[in-house]
Length: 94
Image (cartoon, rainbow, N blue to C red; front, side):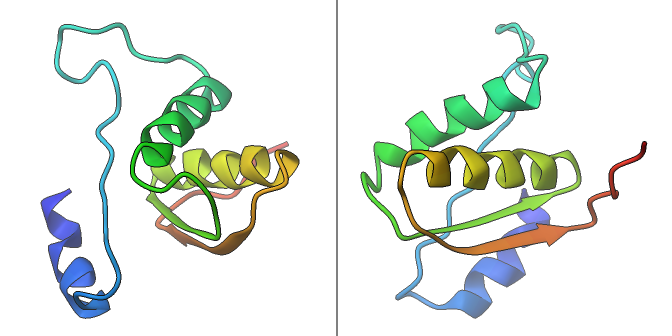
């Protein structure tokens, strides 16, 4: 996530910027195998810092899919997602 340091700096001190590490990359935990499960886990994590919306979400590559699913789940719960930014994420096939 170090490559996002410049983006975080450009947002300024008034806009907090958090990065979430995918579970399982540490070699100690089993990774989530479904985007829906990843999104639910990350929603629980961000709510420890910000309990309610509006939320500003973003994701890079696979993280873009996770951020999109997070936005979907949050909106289904009645939360406001003010912004969803997707970086270098493929379009769906099928």
